[in-house]
Length: 174
Image (cartoon, rainbow, N blue to C red; front, side, top):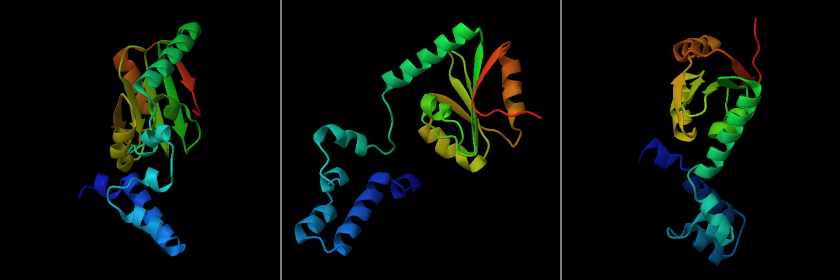
């Protein structure tokens, strides 16, 4: 199978539940449930029906409406501050605004450009993080930061004609 098939959290959870039930000396019924292909991991841990859809996702996400609401809130903050772009920074797992807006946790460094009405652009510092960021980040053009740090953002702001830029997150300068 593909890497996605092998690394699917739901399948890993089923294996972990199956192994845990067997090694813990659980009853035969629990082991059989965990090993039954039709049984889901949420069945094995007896989740209520309203929580199953969340648990069964390949990656936990908020709804489109929730992400839209968050972007609208950012647009309001930008308007009040008089900025035309917003740079949202996560570095070394510090700062959670990129996760709040896109779902991407930020890992080493994520530099996200936001302007209402345009697709967001996010520069991810480690090249090997780019594919995962593209899978997880919501409504974002994910690009490799090319080990250039803020220079990639400055180039993009110049291309867009950015004049006043607000910053959220741990941005440090020389």
